[in-house]
Image (tube, rainbow, N blue to C red; front, side):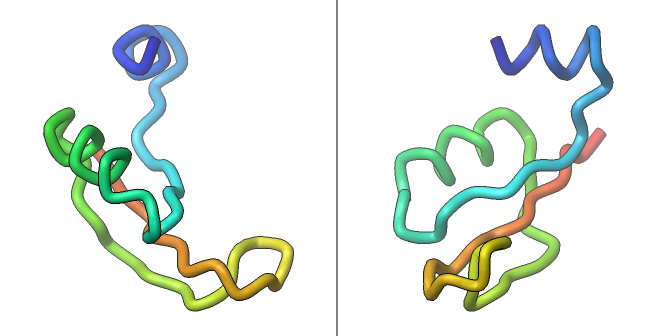
Length: 56
């Protein structure tokens, strides 16, 4: 599904909860790299979020 999103919809960045190391590992495997970290999620709750961008 991720590859479909990358190819069809040009997905090149995403956000992932820092407390989900399996997801982080997966996205890194798919060539995404962290470019920003926030202590709070988009709703202002204390869930650290990593923003990742696809490296070409």
